[in-house]
Image (cartoon, rainbow, N blue to C red; front, side):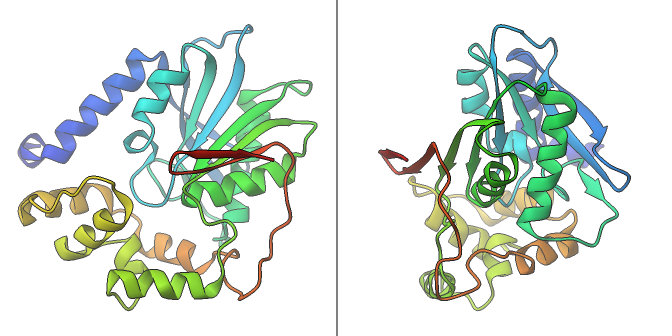
Length: 256
């Protein structure tokens, strides 16, 4: 208990939870099938006058660490649902599946159980790893059930050589050293590649606190998720286009 009170990461998470609560969301959990339970933040009271929007987080921290500003912006206009993907936050499974398609199937089951009715459409936004999942959600549900799919900062069209180039830029040998940092120097590499602001002044003890809070749970299973990715394994593109997709890269938005 004392350690949590002294942890800056733990204190900041309390702030994040209050932001989600202030936006009208509450933490909830549901068994989407016999093996998988999804934890998510959803509206305390669903409005029949708003469309539904699902925000799918990237690899790393649980959902509340990645969507605070978007939840505050979108919640007045949409019924916002923010799930933790399997092995992130409170979402778990007994299944041995580890691909992003499995993650997408769990999100689809959540949508069908609690988000929209049979005649409603849902909009989906995914960032980074969540973009991979959002792509497959769009494929699985089809244009009859999905309105817009927004894929932000996500290499859904990446090839094997792109992963090799990423590791060369980071100066690391294994992708898990970058995506699941265990040391302050590895987290610095990740921040340098993913953040527009340089935060090189942060001390090691603070970075270690964030690593302990955000990257210590379910490390084995998360490494399996990285190995289970189906996109980016080949030197050729293995995706097909979706209708009504927004690809966001930096300040540009391309709608197809």
